[in-house]
Amino acid sequence: MRIGVVTFPGSLDDRDAQRAIRLAGAEAVALWHGDHDLHGVDALVLPGGFSYGDYLRCGAIASLSPIMTEVIDAANKGMPVLGICNGFQMLAEAHLLEGGLIRNDHGSFICRDQKLRVENNTTAWTGDFEAGAEITIPLKNGEGGFIASADTLARLEGEGQVVFRYLDVNPNGSLNDIAGVSNARGNVVGLMPHPEHAVEPGFGPDTDVAMRSGVDGLAFFTSVITQTLVNA
Image (tube, rainbow, N blue to C red; front, side, top):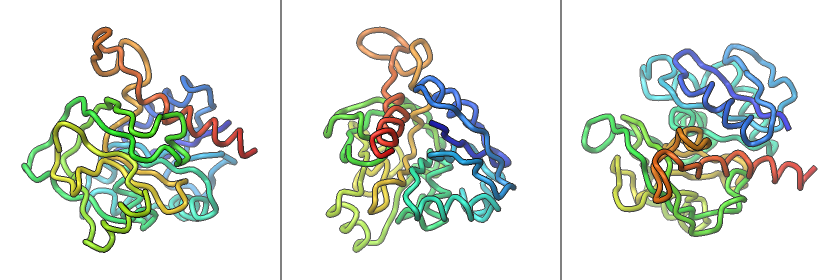
């Protein structure tokens, strides 16, 4: 399986996402924001970072990059797309996901290992999780507060499109403690925490077993591989 990772000016987690994909057992394909070619990939990752310096709004300029025409078309046809942090902001700005992301309510950048609950394990990126599972994923953002209108929020909750929820602490003021959402079809998922930083023993969050042993993020990437093989 081939999973593309799009690099934008200011991306800084693209290489980490590529490594996570390889550790999961797929081929990572580097894609460039200025191209109009997805090179035949089976799924896409929009990585974290500070695309275009986060000018205007985070992800706003990147959402208009040339390759996003192909990303939007592929997503609307059912291709799995994962947006991580800045990638989540891009997906919201491109209207592939509902809601938006604003400045953290405390006004500061935050970096921590964050506990999440898996609310929906039927998306393209969560099938290898148990529903209700509690996982720990690194979080680092300055504009991660999820917002939506009351009607949109009620629909996301009612239709199972809230995929991840913050546990123990809400790090950025997100409504309903929402950490990640999907589209109605379940092929497009966005979340603020960084699963690509929890895929390899020795480099992940601390666990009760050992320091830096957390690998909860790997299941994001194995999930999409499993689903694609099943649907092939």
